[in-house]
Image (cartoon, rainbow, N blue to C red):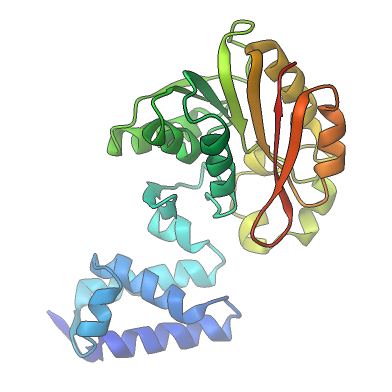
Length: 279
């Protein structure tokens, strides 16, 4: 059954207008992404078939997705998808949405330790980092998270890509033996609770606080993780951390007695990745 006269072009235009009125960023792109999800199509299909009429079920789903986005729900949580390093990962409300900036963390590890034998992704969330590194290297990849719900999502992602990752529910690196690992990588919580009010509402109100906030300083996880990493890494082993805006000095001070400490900026010039080696 079709909805009379409601074409793909009309649906996108209506969605774009609704989203624009609500102040949603990139309203046209968002409307296309939500319609593609409703129709189970890729966006390029729309450019070749703008006059195709929507089936009733497609219009119903599209309307629901638009309504969820208008209420502030991030698009990625509506579609349960987010691309990371060229792969489409499943995301749920239990995991942080993977950001493009975090790809720099992966690239840095690949550049510095392409032949690592054993690596651990601490606080894996969706599993995007661990799965990507497992697929891009020959390493034995292990991923930890304190959240069982996050690990469930990460396991599904690993299965969908046939990625050889072992998942362990743990608080940071507690289960691991001394001097046993070549690489430890992490995108930990690093937002200060004092900065909660400055976050975008779709981040503050929808993404899991366990994966966002790290005490009043924003440094509480780094303060625990860096000493634990020093215990677990082999001599010369690599620690690679994503860091927040304005945190490079404070996190560098926590690793001041490590070797080869470097800060790598992202494409916007913001210090984004800290790497160092165990003495």
